[in-house]
Image (cartoon, rainbow, N blue to C red; front, side, top):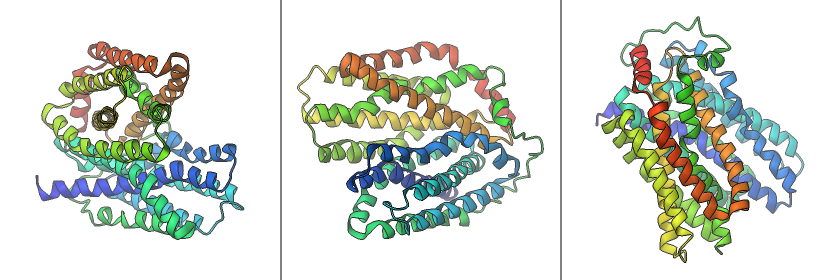
Length: 407
């Protein structure tokens, strides 16, 4: 592997870490801190509003594309957005959760709007700097950054809060975000003498035009369903362990630390597999893995839940999710129009977020009505449904069309 390629991966890993650690902290750790401060569950629920910009970001993604004719322009968006993000995070440290709760929520929504903007620019930047054979490993860095960020944001930062308090925690978080900007600031975005791309025809309604493309419906259906065979299990895994008699500490170790670590470890093998097989062959591999994972958990309900089986199931689950994520990111990078990379990639990932949200909500209702065994059985069915639909929703010619347009 060339040094220039390694530098690309390191740059992308740092950027995805910079956005995932604060996201994980504010969505998982802040509720813990708030509950310790005797906040109501209703107030804790409002903290989830900070995620709203990540659902709505496709609305301003065309603006980022329209003002970015090359890699340097996307890098400028990344640096400005992330620096603003860091400053907001550090300023929140001077506020009090008890007396300034509403102000903190407003500031975090603003901060996460900047972070979502950084994500748009980072995804487009990644598409432009990565050659086609580098995208699989590049997306391994995106997936790995997300999993490492989850592990650090929900674990390490809680320890910092315990020993150093609210102000130093937010200072540390903001400084980390600024530190993560160093690799992209030093990255030579002029490599290859990239010509400026015409962006004058990029419309503010570009996200609507994306849906009007010929044969795009089958691809969107594949995106919507791809995670469906395992998302329900991921959503219910912690309540499942609670019902098995595990306490919070044990669940944190099994799922939060061990499971997330397994996810990190499987991102690179998934990238190498995709590089070797390509998306047209790999598209069959990952759904099969997901069906096997769901089958394992269905079988687990017929056992005495030996600890080693629980650990094995968690390793398989998080590993499968990580590998599927690498595939989805790589496939989505193939389906972008020239000059609209940030918009098109953002739309596709938002669709996976929305589908995961729908399935997550439904999984609780299904587990209530049919028990965990019934939920796992339905997950097997959804995984098999994807395999049945693949010949109809995955057409090689559709993806080759985009490759020819972006060459």
